Amino acid sequence: MVNIAVFASGNGSNFENIVMCIKQGTLRNVCCKVLIVDKEHAYAIQRAEQLHIPWIYVNPKAYADKRGYEQRILEKLKEYAVDLIVLAGYMRFIGEVLLTSYPRRIINLHPAYLPDFPGAHSIQDAFEAKVSFTGVTVHYVDEGVDTGEIIHQEKILIDPAWTLEILEEHVHALEYRMFPEVIRLVSDEIEKEGQTYETSIGKCI
Image (cartoon, rainbow, N blue to C red; front, side):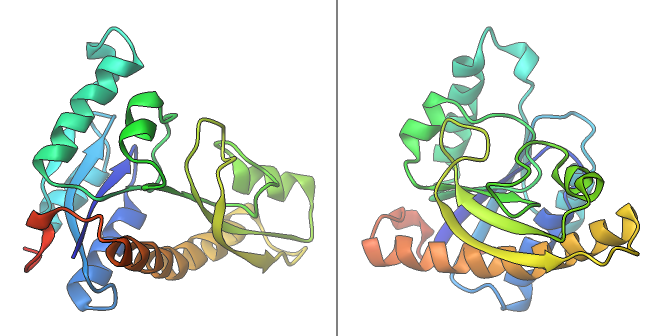
């Protein structure tokens, strides 16, 4: 069993989708132990409560710097014996503390076909650029902005008649299908390497 923590900043729809895949058995040998949010009123918190997943709000402004903020998060991750960090709409750069503590154990979902359209507004950027395709990418996180090693990505051909809202719907639909599949692949690799916490063996509650 691989224990994951999901990080989110807003709506949390991908977080909910991941948890539902676990509960329905389509994402096996993975346990979502905790949701970490950096926004006090993130809607993802309500989703966590409805799904009976523990959640923790860590206020970045309560710490002198990113190191202090991430040290607090790291303490919580250790309490929950987290093996893999999953970023799902987490709008904050990952710093040295977490990168060092979880080497190749932090993955991010990005709603574009990287290296095209990195950053926070990638769907809108692709739409306004009038490109013929965009996509969804899952990659390992490094110190850059959406520059980590790509694990998996898929394209979406853009119909010129689409509105931005229609494009967003297609991107999110691909996210919901693709992200759990990639989490399973990464988790399988972690299990093969035998780098899970001993406490992660057993039923995911």
